[in-house]
Amino acid sequence: MVRQLIDEAPWGWSLCMPGPERPEGQRFSEEEPGLRVGPEETGAVAYVYVFDVEARRLDMFATHVGGEGRRLSSVSFSSTGSPDLPALDLHPEETVTEPFLPGEPLSARALKDCLEGLPPLEAVRETDSTRLEWVDTQQGPDESLSILFRVVTFEDGFISNVVEQEWDLVPPSARREPERVRHFLEAFAEVLLEDPKRFNPFWISAQDSLRRSGARQRESFARILRAHWARDFGSEDASS
Image (tube, rainbow, N blue to C red):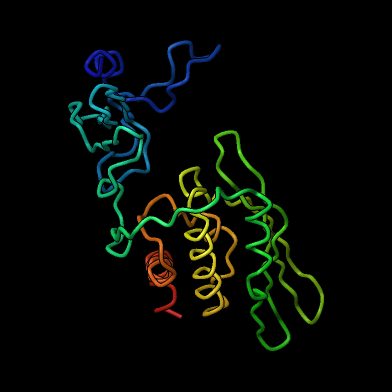
């Protein structure tokens, strides 16, 4: 299957979805090969993804010019569908696996109550301030729980900016461990209040430790969140 796909598009694809104007999709050419693709350069889209159902594995192959169809990476999954965590490029802090914390399944209402029990999340800087407000929680079609929140910025007492984001935080598996979710949220509040720069709504909504890690204790989540901030903005903090 992989060889057939690559042979049919030997220069890779810039657009894999056929349409009325391009019934066979838009392909790269030898004269215009597009961006280079590799494990460290993943900005281009000249890939073929293949699910090996029997092996419970997802493989990624290169189809760019000169790529020769080689396999770039793979992610394996357990019989329950959980990914092989080391394959997800985890931080060392994320590789921790801590004892299960069973409890009553977490509902959207219980999650909202947990959020409202956190300390006020506000950073004050002279005449300016930034506040994180919890708007709502809801259950998704896959039984995950998401949070709608907004970050409000004030200048001289007046609202200068409002950003609203949806945070798909709680996967279905984590709903069986309400204490684990509470520990994460407490760690999140602690880490957020350490630095006003962390009131970044896009950074917040990208945090996914309940899926990526096996951590369950507040201290572990705090270390993970700080590591993520250092990875994402460490160089900016150093330059400033």
